[in-house]
Image (cartoon, rainbow, N blue to C red; front, side, top):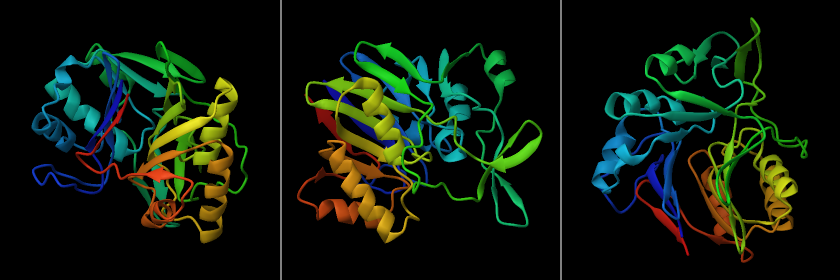
Length: 275
């Protein structure tokens, strides 16, 4: 059995006791093993977990999809509250990230470094391609750029080797779960491009993508790109979609009106169960 519980997302749900803000955090359970996928930007996801009767103290391994603050800064609060043994990230995770508006730089990074992990006795594991977590559960990174129209906004930059350059988001990773129906993919922001991510995953596992949940960063995408994305999602075999966070209202509405997809919201407090 697979459960995906949204500890925090940009939007609230029917549970008015839960706090929400710009960010993302999923509590994912596969059989009897649980993972925290992303930590949002602060401690609200921790408070929400308590109100959802989720015991985060039983999780020893944390997964961060990439090092933007709204997915990673909450890790600091997590370490303040619980004993964390492992952090899994993509490569170049600690390269400082910024937003650049042509005049000034705004820091967007995770707020900690390798020394913080060492000081707290936390093992850092890097996923640079495919990393098996348990039977049928994997992390995947190092995504191919198969779709040239999937471009990340130029304002996202990174400091690497003493230089500022356009961020290629080489640190981004996604969670992949094998099922009898196909692959279930959980994404953070999909900065490399949701189609680039899914096509790479399909190629590596030789299976269709059945379900996709999480952020896709299509909030700024043109109508043409949104239309092409839907066409390509169908080619990849996708049936179930639960886009959220940075995906944008346009793509979510298009999916709802497309008879080829089954869709749902995954707002704060929402939950998916796959038997």
